[in-house]
Length: 111
Image 1 (tube, helix red, strand yellow):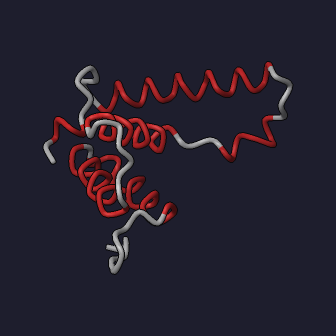
Image 2 (image 1 turned 90 degrees about the horizontal axis):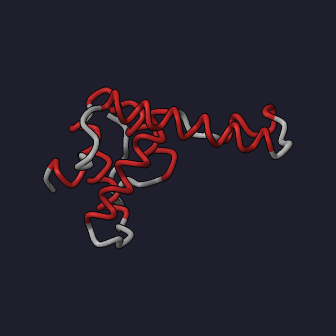
Image 3 (image 1 turned 120 degrees about the horizontal axis):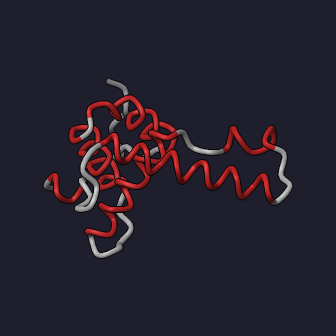
């Protein structure tokens, strides 16, 4: 898997990715508030900015693979490649691996 599969063609840096993720989260919060939802009820269920960045990068990798959903082993490799390409996201990636159970069978996500 090359870094081009992880790094979206139109996104230059983690700084830009975080800004896009923050804008997306702000839009979601705004829409839910306009819909009358109580922020105390939904804020904790929203991903963090870095989690959303990882999800966006993961989506780009899925799109690069023809849109096919990956096996747990491939999910694990994709997320590890994200952590390698963006070292600042390493803690978030490892936490997500553990939370979603994306480690391949027989492996743990502890370092």
